[in-house]
Length: 279
Image 1 (cartoon, helix red, strand yellow):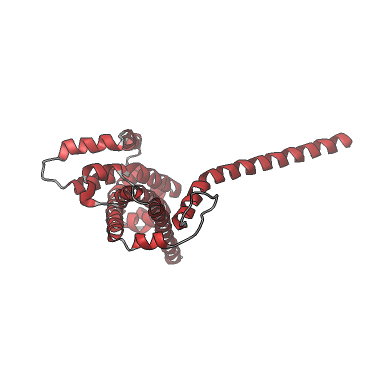
Image 2 (cartoon, rainbow, N blue to C red; image 1 turned 135 degrees about the vertical axis):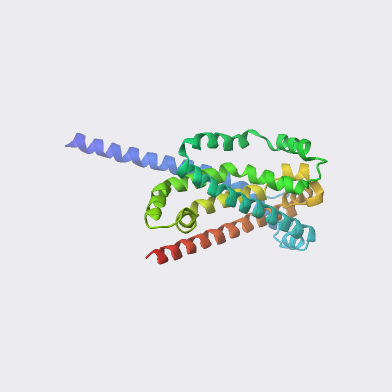
């Protein structure tokens, strides 16, 4: 009886130690990830931060200066329009294509996946040089070239998210059931498949949008100051004031969090309405 009790106590003690070890690892990883962000937030509010551990004073001056700058507002608008436009075009083109491949041509899926993943093998600088050699002097606006490159560059993110969602809801079975009820393929795709995979589409779209919103290499090399986006503006601000640059980074995170929250909320509302209609 004593040996059994000792064995149980040792087992509980080992579980308790593992529990503390996991929490310690999570704490260290969390501090490693959050401390730079916290320092950036504090620096964006600091009047001076040179001689002490914490800022010597707090102010909203840097945010006021940032949002009063017309260059910032213009560059933010350009980034928003370019990123959102490229993401929407990519979703409109890619989602139906992925649906057709997964449901009606599954044998081609591995080849399409390999083709889509080749975009990872092209660094931004090499892609920019190739686009310049291909389209310079052809009368095509480099802004359109950048938009097209953005659409192609987002294929891996949209492909994986949409493909996984289609497999989760078993899209082939849903299409067969819709066909038995007399629905056309296009009607079934829009009214049944899309609402069911909307969470995956939203996640893929948000990931693509955030990646494009922070893209710097392509737009800087191909267009440069002719179309100043938020990242180009940030690069210029870094040489002038670290406080304003920190305020810009904090504002960027807040804006992206608000946009993500709104889109996810809209997706949840759409799903609830779809469930209500089906009931």
